Length: 177
Image (cartoon, rainbow, N blue to C red; front, side, top):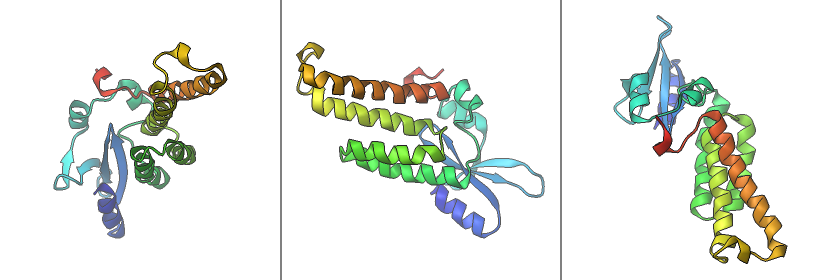
């Protein structure tokens, strides 16, 4: 809905952009007459929403705000990345983990502060680990020597992806404030 709202408002000559909060996309509208920017909830009657509402209902870390991960006006390119992330999520849902990783890595250079995308990469690596190792080997010591290097690589990539998201200020919901 936010993207449809943006397309229509843009056609009307209004100054609108997409923005994000944890697991949420909304619209930022700038009034040309006053220069004031408002948050608009396209999925809730196009009603305005204050930054404090997002902070209360969609908790985010101060680090994420400082790094511009959330609450910023997105460029057109960044907005396209947010839209295309649906494709990454689709591949994850279908357990097509390598395709999800490939798509996410194509998108990241166009929006490197999109912490959510790093979490999707980490999730994809976890899916590969689960299917190829966790289900087959009850303990780490049970992994055959010839497969340990692959396991180690996948495990490192999983941790690296989540480390990158956390460095930007992302945290699992239960760890925020």
